[in-house]
Image 1 (spheres, rainbow, N blue to C red):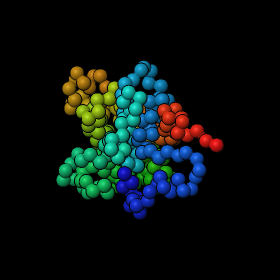
Image 2: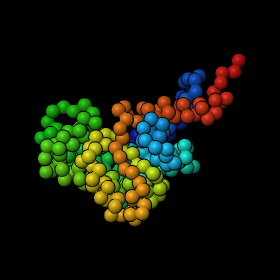
Image 3: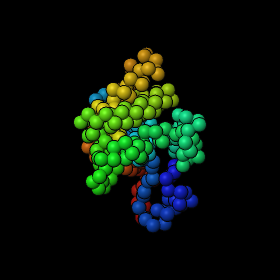
Image 4: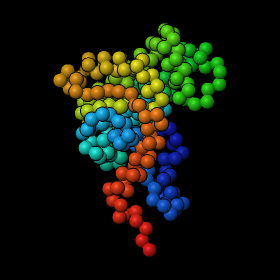
Amino acid sequence: MVTRMPSWHDVNFIDEFQNEFDKPFFIEQDANAGALAEWWFGNHGRPLNSLTYFLVGEGVGSGIVDHDRLLLGNLGIASEIGHISIDVNGPACECGNRGCLELYCSATAMLKKAKKLLPEIFQEEITNRWEACNKVFIAAKEGNEKALKLVDEIAEYIGYGCVTLINGYDPEIIVIGDSISQGGNLLLPTINRIVKERILPEISSRVQIKISELTIDPTLYGAAAIATDKMLRKPSEYLVRK
């Protein structure tokens, strides 16, 4: 869902690209691409049946790979966890729902609060959200109480998201990625606490929650993974016929 760019809602991306290029192209949601990247390149150390990539960045989303296949649903939004309501009376979201998870733990949400709570760390020019998020995490690591409280709050909401993913999709592993994942070990203890409090121990003990270790944005890895996966599954569709 392109919730942050309403002027693009009526644009048919497939038609636009088909009219512009004579080469095969693929369009996929960023979290789905990240999920395939983690499945293929994440080096998780054991054969997996299911994996969830929990994207927590400018927005919040997830991608599910189950037995080597992306779980897409009817419209390709089967795991749009960022727009699951955690407060039915909460603030309005651009998607039309209220109290969406994305409003509480995305980079956008964290930075909005951080600029009010920690104006001193934003005095210098910041070029992108990755850098801005990292400044908050650095302040927390240095013992800034306001930063620590904010990071813990974000981690709690990510934990609620993990609870939903476990109950909804039963993954073996949840990999947290994108700009908020820079918090790493600042986030994981609280996330794991929330999961243990809200999921039966017989289930929570069998789910691993970790931070992505891919050194390049998993969505970029995923772009290559999506194209490769499509080509390998049906190569005859993309052979050039003379």
